[in-house]
Image (cartoon, rainbow, N blue to C red; front, side, top):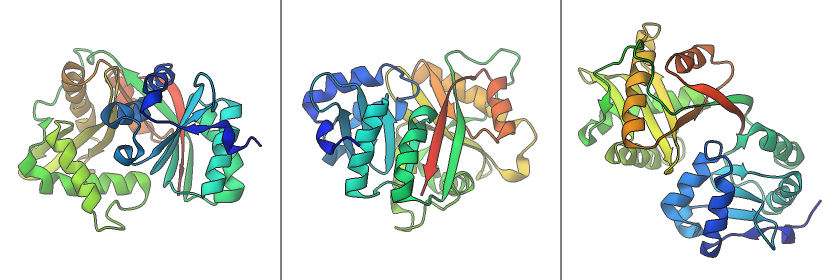
Length: 282
């Protein structure tokens, strides 16, 4: 096992090199790219550390170490070095997420020290689109940007979606203070889209991570009693139109492989598979 001296914690001097590594696959690396674009490499502002491999010379690989542990273009040697750092400091993250070919080896080395996880989702197709859905796909004209005064309407739907998807409530711990602030921020920045009928959320989705080249869709949800009526397809079509016009030229997402209905809806509105993620949840 390589020692931690083989990696370094990055700072502002490494910004351009870090972006070069991220640019090798802007879609797969969207989350980390967005974090760095928004806050830079200062760990106090980022709320995380970014490790670089190797310690000397041109950067080959990165690892974002915060609430999520996210490998970026991690080579086998880099994965060993990142694992050694993780072992030394102990688990501080609530999940490991990223390209399956990197997360798999990373977790296999960490499992004896960090296990058992709450869940492992070993295959999550990554999908993306850079064009509006076909004209034959219906749009929902009632899907729009959520307004600040609708926070208390939208928040329960966000909590329901998160709990359904992740298996735990985002309100655990601090009673939802941080999560409420996050939803408020998404609304304020125009990245929360929804159809709200008579004070009830029918459909919603958010753009969670944004870089100049790509953004990532998250939190797609249809009110359970209204599922199976084509609401998701029409809602997604409108979301794609709005996001590609105003946010970034490529819209991406990742989805659990067993969620066949969602994958079919995404394909219908023009998303195509371009990779595979894995997630380890604690």
